[in-house]
Image (cartoon, rainbow, N blue to C red; front, side, top):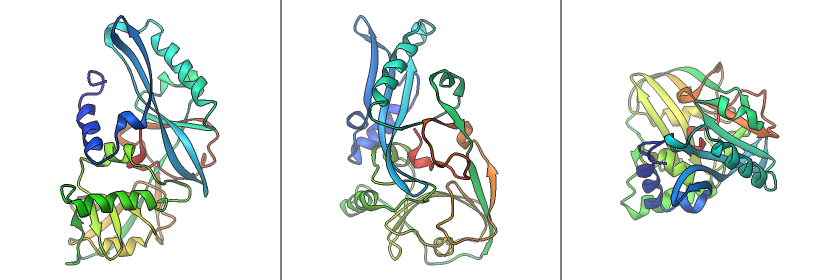
Length: 268
């Protein structure tokens, strides 16, 4: 896995330190040559809310074959085993990839995603977020509490009660907390542009209240999930491939055709 995805082991270690082991969360399907693992496909469970309905989807991830064993049919064998297993458990499978051609033969299809842009004229505030420190037991406990009780960031496509994928995707990034909102924000600021990737809270608040926590002027907000719960107007939606990857789905997916994005924190 490390040979195929450099840096993955450090992200997995970050997840372990935060209390959610990738190895425990993922069901591995592997082919061996002698004593060497040559092909791997993993399956994770992701509790989601899609078009207002809660369901658990299967997340296919970690698809890797050692370079010297490629083009010998091992990947196909493992993927067929994965799908046989998943078809007994999940009505929906998801994955994100920069190479969709690998998955089209197995019944996966590309589902279009969007980002959302909102103009604003915030001049900045002194009432800012604070950065979470996971060496502090209080912040560690706070993160787990909110992940366990979080509301979906969108009723179109959102995630609930999920930790391992969140920790791998967000655990090594800066996370911001607003105490009065009891809200963790996955965000980045680029000049006067706010990039908003996810919100972890028991009740989604308005975008206005979130911007009020930013201590510098903000002229535009780019939102990487459907913003219907943020109480915003004049939102523009744009087709977008997040980090040059596409979302692929196999089976039922009620949000197909809607304007949404699977949050960065849930991409696998």
